[in-house]
Length: 97
Image 1 (spheres, one colour):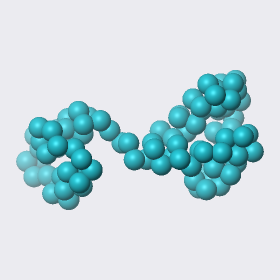
Image 2: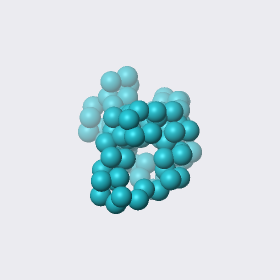
Image 3: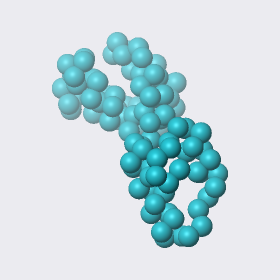
Image 4: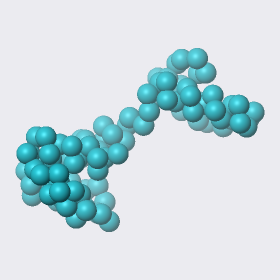
């Protein structure tokens, strides 16, 4: 998810060709987030870490999470309460929460 967002930014904001942006992403393979962020700074991309935080925080819309929970409830009958507590804490308060 983060790599895709980085590629989009490299192409749209840094006017990089898609192939070059993908090459930059490929160079980052195996790097941790701090290393990858420093690597992107070489291209003038100084807030890549914040993009990682934003994409890591957003893992699904309310509708996507509710559909996931509904599927788990239908398939298993028993669902992990810790996930529901985490989802409620994160602010998801629709149908199944």
